[in-house]
Image 1 (cartoon, rainbow, N blue to C red):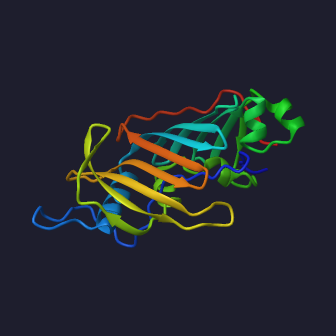
Image 2 (image 1 turned 60 degrees about the horizontal axis):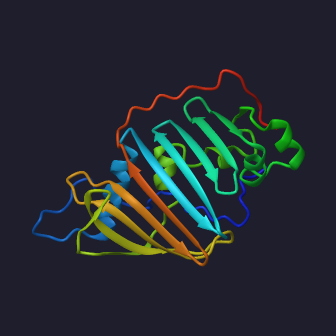
Amino acid sequence: MTKSLVRVVVFVIGISASTLVTILPTEASTPSAESLLASALHNAETSGAVHEVTDTKLDGETLTMINDIGTNEGRQIITISSGASTEVIAFDSMKKAYTEGNELGLKTYFGFPATDAVKYAGKWMESVPSDQAWSNITGSTTLKSDFETNLKIQRPILSNKLVTINGARAYAITGIEAATANSPAATITVYVSDAAKVLPIRFNATAKGESVTANWSKWGESLTLKAPSKSVPLP
């Protein structure tokens, strides 16, 4: 069983860099795209928690993810304009995750067979690392997996012109994400804050017929998640 929305390419958020830099250059020098991305990665991963809202548009449908992500736990609430909905609560430290959704969400997003989608709709299902779907269910439910694994900007270019994003001054860094077997090449723009502590603010990705926008806020928010009181094993 795999997480699937027909032809959806999910550009989730992570930053690849070989050197972590936490202090920007002095005002007398211009920060590089690589140093800003590396600072944003380090500071995001060590922030404690963040609120993330992602919108993916493809084939006339919109997939929205409202996520609260911590160091070792996270929650994703996924809705699709077709009416599909699912939710994931994951506890990396306990190696357990819980999934729930309506019939359409289980079938179109998680790829349940039609009979299982009917049977398990509205029920919380518990999964563990030995389950085949574990990595698909828990992807991007920790700060490290969200920010490090998935966003790979090639040939980043920094715009020296500051812009205002979500009320904060920010640098825009553009680049590309290479095509894979499951996704086309994409043009990427990441906005990072112009502050002593650099943090990512927004992510935009565009590809043929697809677009993704993610916004981050509430850095360091208090995140307390609880496992459902009742659940059944993931089929």
